[in-house]
Length: 109
Image (cartoon, rainbow, N blue to C red; front, side, top):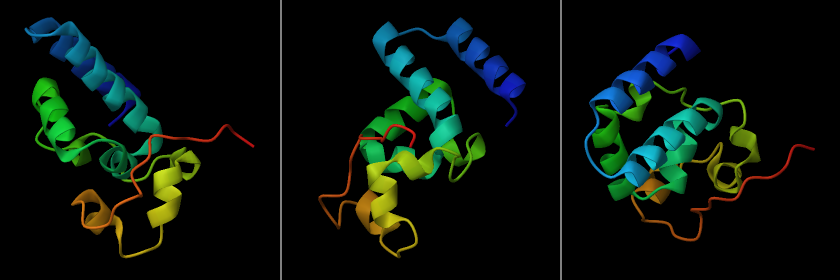
């Protein structure tokens, strides 16, 4: 999805939204950061319930529909570095492997 398309989507969501403003802010923030980190990192950062809640607020069936799988800044995510190139990604997302979820990102080197 291009930046223009994404901004039109956000404009539509904000215009039509009724609910808690802090939840809208968090959902839109996740979407905007997802442009840089990708949907895989978002699934490692947020719980499945949070992802579902934000997708509902955004009117999305899946983050895969609008975000890259792996964004240009994914390499800065601690959680992504732990699972990148392994078969463990979906096990971590499903909670079968613990101790990987992390919201920490490194500064550029």
